[in-house]
Each structure stands twice: as C-alpha cells, then as structure tokens.
Image 1 (cartoon, rainbow, N blue to C red):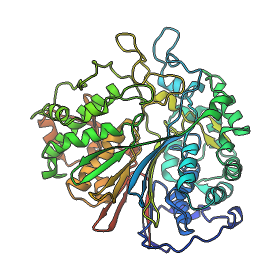
Image 2 (image 1 turned 30 degrees about the horizontal axis):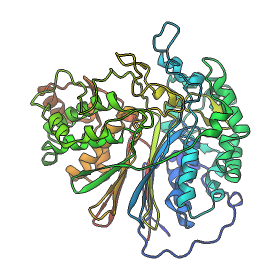
Image 3 (image 1 turned 180 degrees about the vertical axis):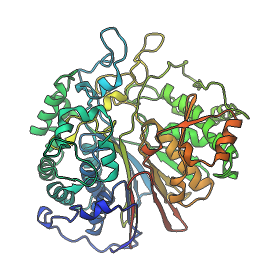
Image 4 (image 1 turned 45 degrees about the vertical axis):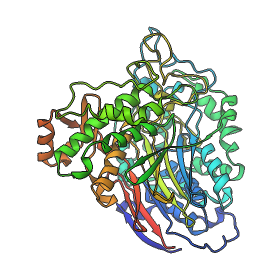
Length: 575
C-alpha cells in the first residue's frame, strides 16, 4: 500500500520531528494475508505524526481499530493539550462485512465516593471554574485506553503490542513543538501553573518551552512500553493506577478516587442512535453523548430551505443560528448519562415535536429561546454545565472498509494540569453540572453521582447510504461548540455541495442562548449585515478551537478534509 496523497498544513517545524519508527521497539509479526475487494484506506487526524503512525499500522496489514490505537498513542504525546491516555473517548465503529455500526463508550466515570455537591463551596455556591479545573476532584477514571482495548480486541488484526512503536520512538527521541502547541504554552491557562505542567514544559534555564523547541518524554515512552506488554492493566492496575490515585487525592481540593475505582472501570458497548437525513442514515453515540441532540439539529434544518441556499446567503446562516439555539436549549435541559437518567430521545426526535420546534424559527431572531417540553417530561432546570475545549477527532478506514470515527479528550486544555507517567490527567468531572438540583429538589440530569459519566458534546458520527454502505464520517473538538462546528460543516458539504475541505474552512457560527459567537472577521460583511437585519449580532467566538475532520464518499471517491484552524492532515492510501 503506497501513500497516494498527503493534504496537510505541513509546517517547517515538522521537518525535524523524530517520526521514524524504531523497528526494534515493534515485535516481528506475520504479514497479513493479501486483501481482496479492498477499498482505499485513509487516516484523517489533527497532527501529521499521529496520522503517519496510523497509516504505518494500516500499511502493515492492520485494521482501523489497530490504527486508532497508534493514532491515540501519538496524539497523547504531540497534542497533549487535547487528548491522551489519561482521558476519555467515544468511538463510533462501522463494520463493513455486516454493514453495522456500534459505539464504544470510553467516557470517564465519577469515583464511588463522588457526591453531587463536590463542586460547591462551603456556602453551597458553585466553585470558581479555574479553581475546580486544577483540583483533584476534577479527574474521572480515564476510559480511552479501555475503550480502545475493547474495540481493538474485537476488530484488530495485529497484536496489541505491535501498535505503539511510532509513539515510543518519538517520545524517546523528542519532537518539535508545533505552532499550535507553542501558542497554547504562551497563554494563561491555569493548568500551566500546576507544578507538573511547569516542569514538563520547562527549558533548562527555567523558562517555558515554545514553538520550535524539542520536547522528549521518556516517562511516557516507559509507560507505553508497559502498556504494549501488559495491555490496559498497565493503566488500571499497578504503579500507574497508584500514581493516578495519589495525584488526584492531593491538595488543592483532593478527590476521592481509589485503586478499586481504577480497577472497576469498564467501557460500555452501546447501540448508536440513528436517524434519517436527506439520503443518509446518520448514526451517533447515545447519551451521555449529545449525538441525539445533533440529530435534532439536522431534523430542524431539514424543515427549512437552507439546502436551497448557500454560504453567501445571510438567510442560510440565520436559519442555522436559530435552529442551533433551539437544539442547544433542549440539549442543555435534558441530556445526561442515559444509565442514570431518562433522556427523552424519542420525544425530542419525534417528527411532530420537530415540526413544532421548527415553527419557532420566524423572520427575526427570537428574543429568548427556552427548552421545549416533549411528551412525557416536566419543565427542566436551567443548566450550569461548563464545557471548555480540549479535544481531538480522527477518522480511520482500513482496506476492508471498516471505519473508526473517534473523538477523544482530556476536557480542558492540558486537562487538570496534573501528570502521571508522562501524560496529563483529565478534568472531565467538571463536565457535570455545577447546579446539581432541579427546582423540586431532585437531581438535575447532569448532576454528579458515583459511577456516572458526565454529559458530553462529543459526537463522532458515521453516515450510511440507503444500502447500509459507509457514506461518510465527521466529528470535531470544541467543547459544547462541537455540535455547531459539525453542523455547519455537514450543511456546507452536503446541502451546499462544497468539497469537504472547503466546507470545513467556512466560518464558524455558534448560537447557544442569546449570545451568537462567530469568526466574525471571516464572514463577508454582507452576511454580518444581513444577520443584523434579522436580529442577530455576531460577537467574536472561539473558532480557533474547532477541530473538524470529515469525509464523504462521493461517487466512490474519498473526499476528506481537515480543519485548517489546526495542523491536520488527510492521508489516503492505494487499494
């Protein structure tokens, strides 16, 4: 399998990166049998080194899940602000032979001793987020490694211990800090004040590393070596688990995680939520993911004439904004861990309810948007969940047509700022609502509870055609803006017919509540003026935090794209 294409924002900084695989760290394995009736494999990821690690596995005869392990191992090293072995994930997987979709839920869980008031101060008020994010209470039991191990165990073709060579070699040799990572290192994130992060990113003279500096991580190389040899037990039992427990229980605001919590973690294999959209069947993860809310957004948009418009029409962006506001109001009100709360998916996606909600999109922006009340639920409490951006998304297809669409995160930038064995710990528990009670005193849908998974905006999706064949995949980084980023991109690619790369480059617009954030300077002034005439005033948002990666199969051709706001790449191999 030769590399046929490379689309990337390849920067000079990558020229010196230690990206060659150390063949001595990869066990010899038998060659895979020749593939028959194969398709073009591809890897789309936010960092070229990660994509190359995945492609190297595919070229050795690996499956999509094999390659996903290699991609994540490298991302944890070269993009530590976004995801890692100390974080969580949702993996949406398409099996070509059966034309079926399944979801591997690797979302973090709250420790057994967690309480719904753990993010309230002594007076009962929510903690300041900057205080909570670096606290020991912020970290949930990590799930990405366990979910990958489950998926690879069921669908892998290569030995688990052969999937980490590229990341181990790069951690040992070091890599060149890219402009994106370098930019984050110069910003005022509270995580960078945590001693672990300070030490990791320090130069010999004590100043902080920056773009172009070399960064090695021998501790991470040692951990990956043990992970390759021992499997997930290297994380969930033994010395690494003990370090995680100790680090999270330390001040300030130590948590309650135990070794039993670590050992008890189990990823969940779930059925996706699927719904029709145009000629496609769109499949997303169920709660605690917000995937079903995204299906609601597609349903609302399909009840407008946005598809007959285009990116130069302010009415198209107006319709997208108002539909987004309606969707977010419902998402914020009702979504939580489906194992703990009854998320009214059926009611929210009921055609009659969608008709009712779509009628609220008038000629001018609504003064205020509130959650609807689908059949069978009571009016909700106002949501107080905060969801910063610190996430990555990637897509892999192997030669047999199997596909991984995976969104992976440590929650905020650099997670909690605390590190163990060369990787950052997540601060995922701050994805729970800081307002844990309903007006009647009952728990809010996204309140903290022992063993519960916090609500997530991650929505790695897979699209099928009418025959059940793989038709596309997409997902993004960006906290609660993920749904808007992915929605804009799909509308641009499918409704407006833009090539995927052009679709992802369209300006971002995030309409949640009464504040409409956007990449204002990237919009044509006529669009901004047209939106203002319709009652929408755009304010500068955080578009740089999107990280959309998407692909459509158009007439048998791979049309893939990476978010130009990051350092992504699309690698496509030959059949």
